[in-house]
Image (cartoon, rainbow, N blue to C red; front, side, top):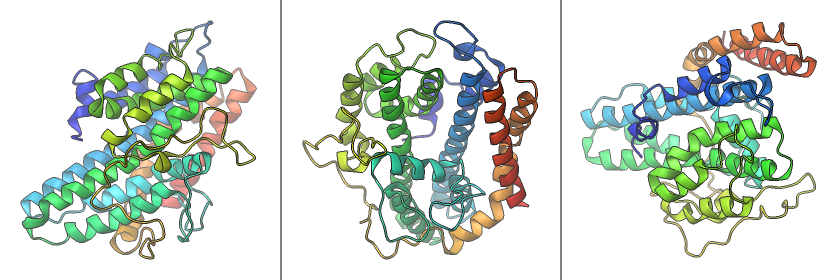
Length: 349
């Protein structure tokens, strides 16, 4: 999927991610305050925090495409290292499950736990997505540093596989919050569905325009009801596009309750046919899946400061607005986020 497909979906606006976060911060557009259905500062918090993380993913994808260009020209560059750093974030701890952070790495770990798509064998992470992602990063790094231009197509294929994996947690998040909106319809759940839809719908629409349009119709948190289709219809619409996106039902999983059983209606689908495996996908038991080592680990160490600075502006907003919040619970949430990001910046230094 070309990076331009995202901006094209949003009428050619190359700053579509910035537009979403700014709207959430300023209470404009879909985040304009209203009474029914309620849209308040809580919605802005969910939108700006999830939107900032989505922006990091968009930057990671852009950097990966720049790495493709480097490969085509025979220039090694540092774009692969930069992609690893922005994917991982600066506070992802080397201990499995500890301080997973708020970047894409952390999101993949959380959704892996939610949807039962976890694996064993790596000391660094639990999710199937991160297992595949770091295996692909290692493959990409090896191909990228080979200055031969003859394997450019393989380089692009691995990049495509990486981008595909990065969207799995967003797909899972859309299913998760569509389910909860159908069940309890809280303000926070509606705002989270809005945010995850914003980044996933263009990806879905690129592979299945009808599915993208149908999902988009269920992603307006200012509408009541927000879901114009049943949850079962929304889930089925996305699942029918799995083969086009290269996913299998087992890869996505189903949403688990605290007792390890699936919530009713969220069970994994059954593949009618096996989706095409990517040229660089690997078994979860592969002993080579050792996480961000070698050049990838060095990249994280070198670029964590960049990651921290990228979200510094959002931190300032959260810290300042928490002191003005008239709602005690919301003020606590903003302050907690401020503490998390300040810790991230301290770790970078």
